[in-house]
Image (cartoon, rainbow, N blue to C red; front, side, top):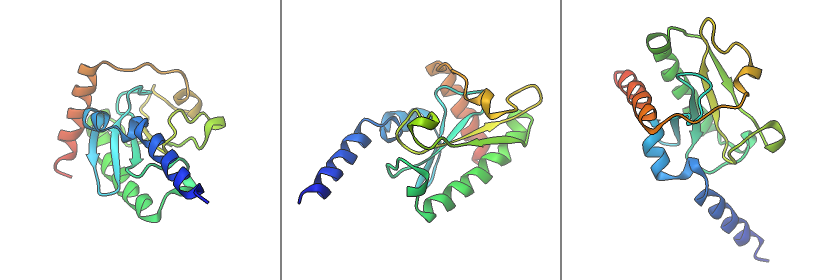
Length: 154
């Protein structure tokens, strides 16, 4: 009888502990903010420029996304892609999304990695899946500010 309420409470609890729903993380790693989605700089980037496209609504899987969220993410991908040549000397990129625990999804909130791929850099998905380390707070601030400045005129 109260299944809907229990589910709602579970979702709220999950969102409460989710790093992609945490206002401090959104502020610290935020690069671009839309009506329905965020772009964050990845805490454990595969390479310089690795950003995350994330719906604001706490959603676990790809098939749960609404069309409006997908449309806004598409526009954000277009904006980010415009600054990759200027900042990372490439217009090539890898778009990666892991759907579910068995696929290696590490945060239970759907997100897409957008990773610039330059000569001598990441060429294959397998390279992007390797263990990565977190960047420092100072480095995060530098990289997010660099992207914010580049995106301002777009």
